[in-house]
Length: 147
Image (spheres, rainbow, N blue to C red):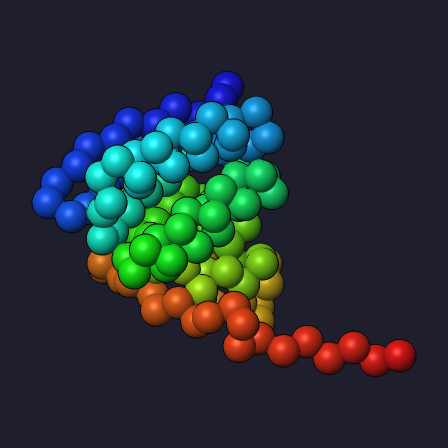
């Protein structure tokens, strides 16, 4: 199954809902549609509802990073609304959850990530009240290379 996208526009916010698999097969088409919409509407905020994403790979992740960069260059911001479990898991493992704006609302019917397999990583925000994390610029991260 490939991802599908629905868009709506209100004031200065462009909202898009992505469902299905966000992967190699779907990322090019979705990026094209987002690029066209961003150029046409020039929104101050892009909100991607990722609650319906069933699978995400590195190409899906590239799309999210691309969208974040596009919005930053335009002086706006990207908000990831209610990311599904696979999206939250990938963002947490790669420590990108602290770099992107993530908005989660409580939903008792959704699986929770309370059983955290990585004790050094903070638990998910899936069960929290509305939470928006501040992003930390990626450029501030330093990596030590020993040789």
